[in-house]
Length: 150
Image (cartoon, rainbow, N blue to C red; front, side):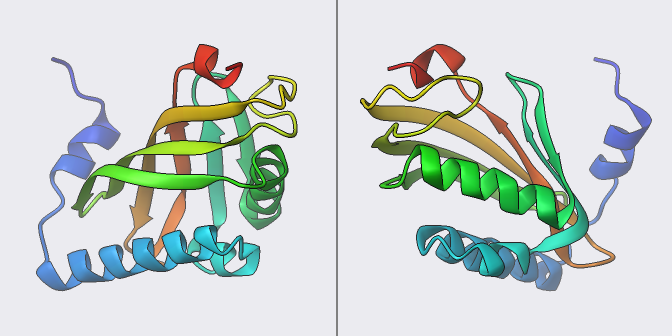
């Protein structure tokens, strides 16, 4: 397997137990804010130059304003959304989680028009950690695009 220079640098990061606790606490704050649909609380966990990316569609939102748009679209598309966490890894590079997103698709999302149907979607989400700001630099999200359409 060939590694990219950025990947090598990420793998070289040491494990500082105090930093791992800070990363985990920030992820908990982020998750609570998301459950409450508290966009300001979500933004408080993100670096100013954050990037949100839905990998399968290539959609990107940049900066705090972009993150606000991303969450506005998500909450409008699934106003009753809930995330059920099934896997999580916290490391010096950030947090990786697997969760099931459930909700009723009431608005467009990920390039798919609203169906009005209940959706249960397994999502994989990476929250990159920035040790300089001690905030997340956004999210990279993966899922099966066909599952959004219901």
